[in-house]
Image 1: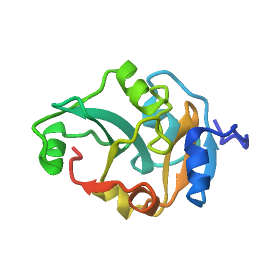
Image 2: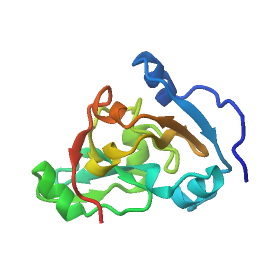
Image 3: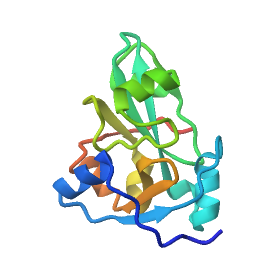
Image 4: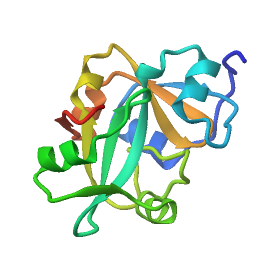
Length: 162
Protein backbone atom coordinates (compact mmCIF):
# COMPACT_ATOMS: atom_id res chain seq x y z
CA UNK A 1 0.00 0.00 0.00
CA UNK A 2 1.45 3.36 -0.98
CA UNK A 3 1.77 6.36 1.27
CA UNK A 4 -1.44 8.28 1.47
CA UNK A 5 -1.20 12.02 1.00
CA UNK A 6 -3.77 12.72 3.63
CA UNK A 7 -3.62 15.37 6.32
CA UNK A 8 -4.52 14.19 9.80
CA UNK A 9 -6.20 16.57 12.21
CA UNK A 10 -4.02 18.01 14.93
CA UNK A 11 -3.09 15.89 17.95
CA UNK A 12 -1.49 16.91 21.26
CA UNK A 13 1.77 15.58 19.73
CA UNK A 14 1.60 17.77 16.62
CA UNK A 15 0.58 20.77 18.74
CA UNK A 16 3.68 20.17 20.88
CA UNK A 17 5.92 19.85 17.81
CA UNK A 18 4.56 23.12 16.40
CA UNK A 19 5.03 24.91 19.75
CA UNK A 20 8.66 23.74 19.79
CA UNK A 21 9.18 24.86 16.18
CA UNK A 22 9.98 21.31 15.04
CA UNK A 23 9.72 20.57 11.33
CA UNK A 24 7.97 17.28 10.62
CA UNK A 25 6.40 15.40 7.74
CA UNK A 26 3.17 13.43 8.15
CA UNK A 27 2.93 9.78 7.11
CA UNK A 28 -0.47 8.08 7.20
CA UNK A 29 -0.96 4.33 6.91
CA UNK A 30 -3.74 1.81 7.43
CA UNK A 31 -3.55 0.83 11.13
CA UNK A 32 -3.62 -2.92 11.74
CA UNK A 33 -4.22 -4.30 15.25
CA UNK A 34 -1.00 -5.86 16.55
CA UNK A 35 0.76 -4.95 13.28
CA UNK A 36 3.32 -2.84 15.10
CA UNK A 37 6.26 -1.14 13.49
CA UNK A 38 6.67 -3.98 10.99
CA UNK A 39 3.31 -3.18 9.43
CA UNK A 40 3.81 0.60 9.32
CA UNK A 41 7.33 0.18 7.89
CA UNK A 42 6.03 -2.18 5.20
CA UNK A 43 3.17 0.12 4.17
CA UNK A 44 5.32 3.25 4.14
CA UNK A 45 8.37 1.66 2.53
CA UNK A 46 10.71 2.49 5.41
CA UNK A 47 13.22 0.20 7.12
CA UNK A 48 11.70 -0.98 10.40
CA UNK A 49 14.96 0.01 12.15
CA UNK A 50 14.10 3.69 11.47
CA UNK A 51 10.54 3.41 12.79
CA UNK A 52 10.75 4.31 16.48
CA UNK A 53 8.27 2.81 18.91
CA UNK A 54 7.16 4.66 22.03
CA UNK A 55 6.88 2.32 25.02
CA UNK A 56 5.40 3.38 28.35
CA UNK A 57 7.01 1.50 31.23
CA UNK A 58 7.25 1.89 34.98
CA UNK A 59 9.90 1.38 37.63
CA UNK A 60 9.52 -0.54 40.90
CA UNK A 61 7.83 2.50 42.48
CA UNK A 62 5.24 2.53 39.65
CA UNK A 63 6.75 5.80 38.33
CA UNK A 64 6.02 5.89 34.59
CA UNK A 65 8.69 6.49 31.97
CA UNK A 66 8.98 6.35 28.21
CA UNK A 67 11.59 4.43 26.24
CA UNK A 68 12.01 5.10 22.51
CA UNK A 69 13.29 2.04 20.67
CA UNK A 70 14.03 0.90 17.11
CA UNK A 71 11.02 -0.92 15.68
CA UNK A 72 13.05 -4.05 14.96
CA UNK A 73 14.58 -4.25 18.47
CA UNK A 74 13.36 -5.14 21.93
CA UNK A 75 14.07 -3.42 25.24
CA UNK A 76 16.20 -5.22 27.81
CA UNK A 77 14.34 -4.08 30.93
CA UNK A 78 17.29 -5.24 33.05
CA UNK A 79 19.74 -3.09 31.05
CA UNK A 80 17.31 -0.16 31.03
CA UNK A 81 16.87 -0.34 34.82
CA UNK A 82 20.65 -0.45 35.30
CA UNK A 83 21.15 2.47 32.88
CA UNK A 84 18.65 4.74 34.63
CA UNK A 85 19.51 3.75 38.20
CA UNK A 86 16.37 1.94 39.32
CA UNK A 87 15.84 -1.60 40.66
CA UNK A 88 13.49 -2.78 37.92
CA UNK A 89 11.47 -1.69 34.91
CA UNK A 90 8.43 -3.34 33.39
CA UNK A 91 5.91 -2.42 30.69
CA UNK A 92 2.76 -0.69 31.91
CA UNK A 93 -0.56 -2.42 31.35
CA UNK A 94 -2.29 -0.84 28.31
CA UNK A 95 -4.92 0.97 30.40
CA UNK A 96 -2.22 2.37 32.73
CA UNK A 97 -0.07 3.47 29.77
CA UNK A 98 -3.10 5.19 28.27
CA UNK A 99 -3.86 6.98 31.54
CA UNK A 100 -0.28 8.31 31.81
CA UNK A 101 0.20 9.24 28.14
CA UNK A 102 -3.29 10.30 27.13
CA UNK A 103 -2.90 8.20 23.96
CA UNK A 104 -4.37 4.88 22.87
CA UNK A 105 -1.87 2.03 22.76
CA UNK A 106 -0.77 1.81 19.12
CA UNK A 107 -1.01 5.59 18.88
CA UNK A 108 1.31 6.62 21.72
CA UNK A 109 3.59 9.55 21.03
CA UNK A 110 6.34 10.81 23.33
CA UNK A 111 5.27 14.37 22.48
CA UNK A 112 2.45 16.15 24.30
CA UNK A 113 1.78 13.43 26.88
CA UNK A 114 -0.91 13.96 29.50
CA UNK A 115 1.57 13.38 32.34
CA UNK A 116 5.19 14.57 32.30
CA UNK A 117 7.40 11.48 32.27
CA UNK A 118 11.13 10.85 32.03
CA UNK A 119 12.01 9.92 28.46
CA UNK A 120 14.87 7.68 27.37
CA UNK A 121 16.02 6.87 23.85
CA UNK A 122 18.12 3.97 22.58
CA UNK A 123 21.37 5.75 21.74
CA UNK A 124 21.70 4.13 18.30
CA UNK A 125 18.43 5.81 17.22
CA UNK A 126 20.31 9.12 17.38
CA UNK A 127 22.73 7.97 14.66
CA UNK A 128 19.93 7.74 12.07
CA UNK A 129 19.38 10.56 9.58
CA UNK A 130 15.57 10.62 9.92
CA UNK A 131 13.08 8.60 11.96
CA UNK A 132 9.36 7.93 11.92
CA UNK A 133 7.67 8.17 15.31
CA UNK A 134 4.04 8.14 16.36
CA UNK A 135 2.22 11.42 15.88
CA UNK A 136 -0.44 10.76 18.51
CA UNK A 137 -2.93 8.64 16.61
CA UNK A 138 -3.10 5.08 15.32
CA UNK A 139 -2.02 4.96 11.69
CA UNK A 140 -0.18 8.27 11.89
CA UNK A 141 3.59 8.72 12.07
CA UNK A 142 5.68 11.87 11.84
CA UNK A 143 9.10 12.03 10.23
CA UNK A 144 11.62 14.03 12.26
CA UNK A 145 15.33 14.43 12.80
CA UNK A 146 16.43 12.27 15.76
CA UNK A 147 18.09 15.31 17.35
CA UNK A 148 14.57 16.46 18.29
CA UNK A 149 14.42 13.56 20.75
CA UNK A 150 17.33 14.80 22.86
CA UNK A 151 16.88 18.51 22.08
CA UNK A 152 13.30 19.75 22.58
CA UNK A 153 12.02 16.46 24.07
CA UNK A 154 14.93 16.06 26.48
CA UNK A 155 15.27 12.28 26.13
CA UNK A 156 18.31 10.76 27.79
CA UNK A 157 20.34 8.32 25.65
CA UNK A 158 20.66 4.78 27.02
CA UNK A 159 21.83 1.46 25.66
CA UNK A 160 19.22 -1.25 26.25
CA UNK A 161 18.40 -2.69 22.80
CA UNK A 162 18.41 -6.45 22.23
